Image (cartoon, rainbow, N blue to C red; front, top):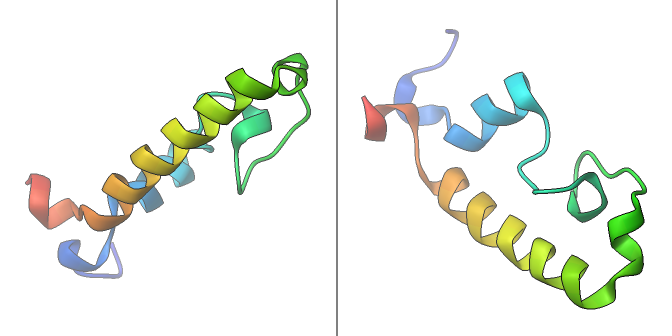
Amino acid sequence: LARRPDNITLAEVVRLFDGALAPTESASKFFYGSTPVEKEKKLISVFRELRDMIANKMEKTTIADVS
């Protein structure tokens, strides 16, 4: 790795290897893709809320925190 573990977030690693942190592409900020789920306004709202909670935690957690 080119950076120290305390400068690499879990979110960066997951996005690099797996893509979106969101539970569905239509709730993703960085990997958006249209899906049938987005027609369900209440459901997509919940998915976006989950995405934000997961992203916030993973953006604040570094590799050093978990090793």
